[in-house]
Image 1 (cartoon, rainbow over the protein chains, first blue to last red):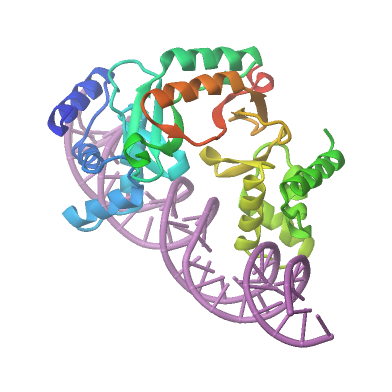
Image 2: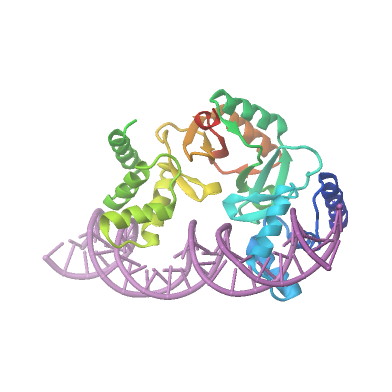
Length: 144
Length: 144
DNA sequence: AGGCGACTGTTATATAATAACATAATGACT
DNA sequence: AGTCATTATGTTATTATATAACAGTCGCCT
């Protein structure tokens, strides 16, 4: 999916959910899209400053948090970063594979798995929040 | 397992692996054991300072990194914290459940599961590092 | 117009982690 | 014992990540 159609889909997605993809938020989303794979908040901040002059951390963090909340981005805790979600429209449980070498990200659907996972945790009385799982490793390209 | 036998087991573990559980590292491990669940590096630092006077972040981080490397602790990225590993002796693939309410941690074995997960990732040519998975949610006690 | 709610701007600060270099302890070898 | 290399720890400073708190703005509703 190219950036334009992604952004259009994101617009629709927000409309459906009754939330506002404002100019700023859309701008931040575009900045994230400019990069392959995982992007850091302060990288986005730098990009924003380059295009717009001054900008402070909260501006970026608030927008990123919004985008995560709407399912448009995932937060990658292990790397203190963010990555675009490629299947925000389907109700999915993604498994996010992050390459340690190149930083690129692959998101595969693992709904059946994570469903089973949920059963395991429920067996011990633990109610896990819906979330995406993340694995780090080495991708096909870098592994060769 | 109580703290004393845990520490004794940790000693053995390190001996077997040919690495040194020095006084400092052991001390840090004890400090982590003092807490239930997830502990933060700066909390450990504060504990250490209380007992020993001055101490700087690298002292703590280095020890924590060592303990993670030896499998005695897990790093909990989502919370910027650390938690003791309760099964460092068996070669396990743990699934770590962190309660958002109380911060307590439950580690269950999910080897079969994570083995299957590995197959899925290999199918797309991704070689995932051995790692423990972590889920956040609400534990039995807090859920009631 | 006025007021409400949301979004955004701004300043300051809290929290987390590491770089770089100095010193000390350990162990191997002669 | 002496020396050398290696590992571990101490120390200072800095970088990186994230949030608190408050001020201003904008759109929208009545």
